Image (cartoon, rainbow, N blue to C red; front, side):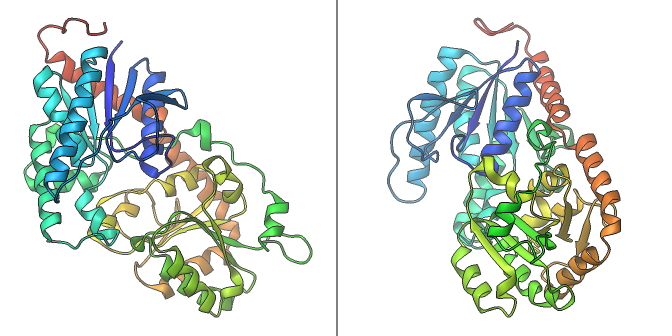
Length: 414
């Protein structure tokens, strides 16, 4: 059995897209017979023991606190993280260390991998300097941006092999000088054991949210379920609702989640002529998300055009297809990798409220086209984005790396 130690920024029981992808990876690898542990750095902020189990997965934690000016603080953070990783390695003896972005995880893992002579896989889910720009934390070309990019390049150059989640990231790495044969794409996926059977609509919840008409029938509902960051384009979606209700007065917009832009979005919605058609739910427990999916007809993903959204594929459109819902998304690179316009969903020009409203209106006007889209979307997820299949790509990466070792290390699992 191969043993793999996953080095992570944070993990369950914290909830984020990052932790849900991690859970899916580790669970799928377990089903393949791979023995997995995880270890998180100082960015895992939920108090916990030195090691804890979450959803049947074991995660080790890094203790301590890093302080100092920018740069020095991160250097100390990497040192504490590397020390914690090394303690787990010496006790458990993994065959492979698999670090996941950001680059601080990769740098800490690299130190240990070289000292302990263990192959290192580095997986890039997004370039975090671009994510920081998308979140409004920094600007492109700033000192922080350049330093983060340089550290990322260093880890990529020294890891034994690279994994990315999409062709956009792979292409950018190749443009930076990384050999194509060093990169494996393991696309975002869906655990169909969790998303494969959509629940029936909860009509009491629908009535509470005013998603039913006077006769008790469901109104047409456009939804967004996720984090409220600026790059998601939710301000443009609210603007589009003003146009949409002119053609479909019964349409409603259901916004589930929260984040940095929530307060501004609520103000914008309250001032909109379509205010009566917009519902904010706030954050909901992960095990309740399916109840809100069930009340929607179309999930809208109006991401703004940026380097981040062009390079990175999101997870939510895949979950939407698995739930048997229609996807309507902006025509940015990350969406084009997942959605075939008119077949598995609809694409519209980014940063254009009128184009968004037009695409939504067209879908609502022609519900007879939905069953074919439902079927095509579900088939796309099953064929290309089911974690039960994706995990086999990791197994091949690990086996290839371990085949390069002349002799197994003492204490390593058979």
